[in-house]
Length: 149
Image (cartoon, rainbow, N blue to C red; front, side):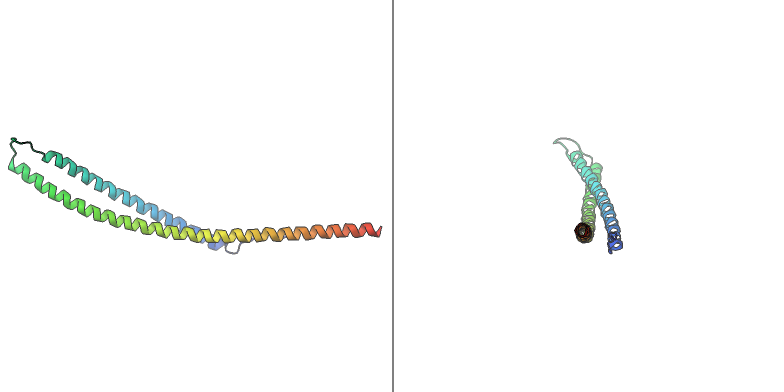
């Protein structure tokens, strides 16, 4: 009886390696996206803090230099937030592309694994047929010996 040999085993291993690499690339892209999202949250927190500082009550004296500084800082923060949102969107698109790539490679691996399973089932059927044939030959030989006696 011969051993089970899956002829596409090297292809399967290659595809699994590609899948792992794609998974790692997706993980890295997701990590970079999370970093950019954290930067955006930090900028938005600074903006919220600035709004709170900008809240001047009626009748309070406000120095023009402070108002000018707050205005300039506010403008810069808004620019940085807009820029960070664009960067975050780009990272999201990159992460989505990496995820799609990883998904395609996972499907490729699944296809080959299904083929391997199908070949394994065929092998088991063949082994069962050979075993049954062997058992039949033993039975026939035993029956013939008994008849000859």
